[in-house]
Image 1 (cartoon, rainbow over the protein chains, first blue to last red):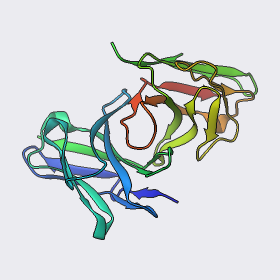
Image 2: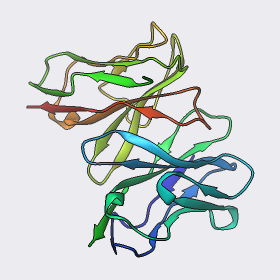
Image 3: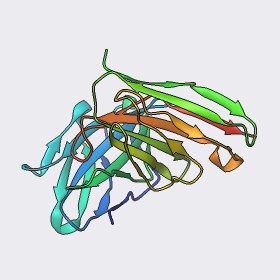
Image 4: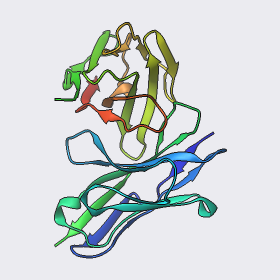
Length: 113
Length: 113
């Protein structure tokens, strides 16, 4: 069965600092991996996804993530945090051949001026 | 404009009074899904549908029903709501499941007293 673990329910960074949000997955086969962002009082929107090919994936708003099979990880990074990045971030996994998507518990990012 | 709509956006009801939350998408997507979001638990999938008349249980289906009679609509039915179903509900759709991005509705905040 697939599962997702997001380490840290709350992360605080200073404006301009590196953002690192951690995601580890469990899957019996190589999965599809996603990061979604949720701004206050809104639905979720896709930041980036990994399906196949290059393991470093670039997304919107300067975010990127690297699929590391050996570490079963898909951590989200951004070199320099902006105030507008304050939101909740969700990692999600879907096993190949299956339609079910499993989300992590989310990480709230606070950006301190 | 491509979108997923949900109605109502806010609902306060009493225990045992049947209710339906509607969901509609205008992107001709095959896959639709319902999630509930609770603090500390992230998004948990309630039901999903891979096409008309094809539905399957997610992780937390107890107390909920769904139907998919038309491709664009996927209503969520609570036949006898209870206080533990107080939550924020999201409908989502995608081209198919698995590797494809999900598009989320704006959410329905349900309170059951």
